[in-house]
Image (cartoon, rainbow, N blue to C red; front, side, top):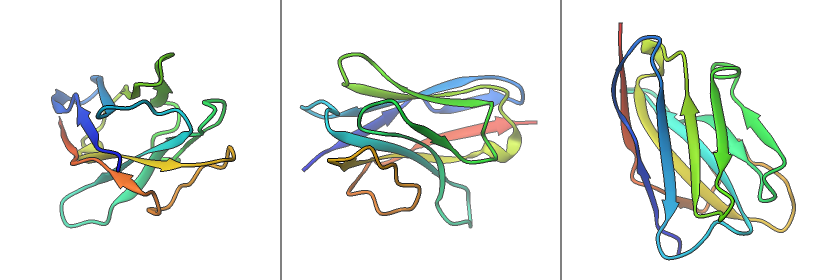
Length: 125
């Protein structure tokens, strides 16, 4: 069992930046692909960004491409989502997710095995 803990959410004005963190309790992310998703009120949870197990592949939703960056620290203990040029439509609960993989495939659907509890991001206009 992998327990994921997100942090870094908050309230920010449009155009501002936030950095979300996702840590795995008691373990590293070695061998895991990591995804970030978000869910706005009354809407479905949708894909935001993902990082392959090797760290060499990243995928982004079109809505965040060029503004958000997913990365991982060298010790593979924390995955980050750097969010710049935030817009009110980025307001949502953000979730990180993990999946043990043996290839560098990166999933963009909701089929990850482990999920965090989410962190709220609110962007004011």
